[in-house]
Figure 1 (cartoon, rainbow over the protein chains, first blue to last red):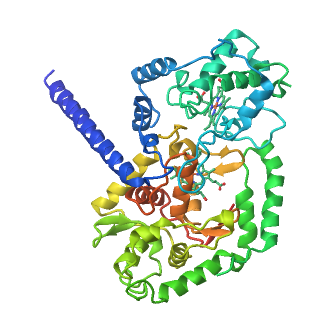
Figure 2: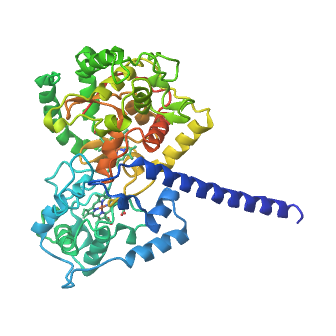
Length: 206
Length: 278
């Protein structure tokens, strides 16, 4: 029994010194970021602030513990807002446009977007969907035939809406942006995109 | 200086290539457009239009300029005053006089202010030529391209001995994983897995030596889509801009730390300079 104690103690000491080291690292990261970006017109320092979820995802490099994962999913689920009429399926033609359009939201000295510029989900950057669109990225899953494969059911619709509104309400530290939560897409745009993915008439399911 | 010559065949074949690979890539998942393109143009490396920018950079380097009316020929890039050959292959590195780790471009800025008397705020008002108005490369871009290309044919081997060099590399990696902005992106979102693309653009995985070396060994590069020579500070700025963040500060410790990390990942990369990219 005797030999167990020192091992436990040094393990504890290791954990303690690691978290001090980690705190020190994070303070330094903040200092680098503070001096790293231009200030002034068309800059937006608020964008450099992390919420709790991104903080955990960054520090763990996406490899969260079971407890951290649960906390993220819970927190992110609570952010989801639905369209005023409560209907999660919109118009797939409009959804096709919102799916395809770029994010806009560029800032800075070079080519800032007008703040009221229509925003899209830029989904093709990461996903294939309409089989006719060949210039599709592959960071995300292939969404071709999405509705046909999953079935045009309430569960599919709800899952898809929530996923797009807040990707991390489904998968903690997902690489997919939280497009509704971060104000890139409106609830109505998201409902339209859900139709584009789920509606049997949409080219995605042809 | 007039717009740099940009042979129209070069653009035409870039566009033609883009279309044919758009189709090929759909099936093959692993596109090679830029690689093939590079192979093609590297057949005749003397035809790289960035070489004209390098020539202009050499003139500027040797010319007496700035309020103090002296040349940059005494600037120390880490291998001693005035030594440019091989210096870029060993950057970023720690500099005693500034007591910080500097990449080529932040070092250049130091020399332009300290030796030539330029005002740093003036120089950094505009560090990148604007491709939208067909502007030729800025002086500081030409200067950096000139110094960098003097490491052509060498191996990338920046030092990692000084505590501040170690810190820059570690901080660079930390920043590489730091997610922020309205899209929740970090560099790792796009650059930490194999075979990934944004639309049809291949994304290097900087956790594999192969990809890191290919990138770090080919910048400065002639960016065909810009019709300009581009240095790494521009690429760092560009990716942050795409992340919808404020403009990255030119030569900032943040930019230098990211480059220290990337260069560390790319250690031993053969430098084939200037490169040629989309």
